[in-house]
Amino acid sequence: QAKLLAIWAPGEDWERHGLTHPAGRESRGLVDVIVHDMDPQQLLDLAETIPPTLVEGLFHLGNVDELLSFFEQFAKAGLEHIVVGDSTGSVGGQAEVIARTPDMQRLFEGLAAL
Image (cartoon, rainbow, N blue to C red; front, side, top):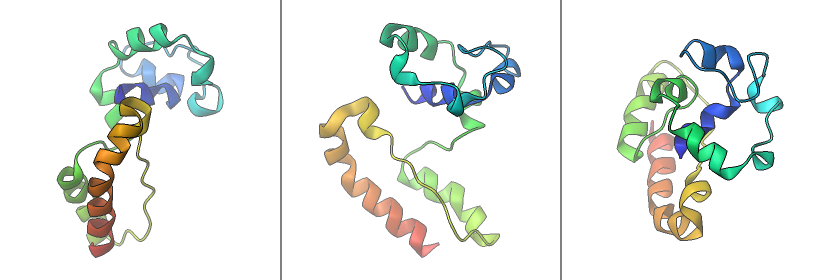
């Protein structure tokens, strides 16, 4: 569930979407939340309540073509460095990571060409 990345957003970001962060309004997100200490079923239930707009304000998610298109505008404006995080394994396991390795290679090659 990619939407669970929003757990690392501060409580005030959640509030802007009419939600309460599981760790409360004062939560600073990433520095206050240890996801591995949370109940897996609670996380799955929580994911159903998270609007995509909350996640989109934190991360850009998509397939290779969508990501390259999105970052092209930044490259044209002078972007020199980007941090790419592949969360495939957290959802699809090792088999999914192996299956998506060619996509990651194409993404990195495409980003380098920008």
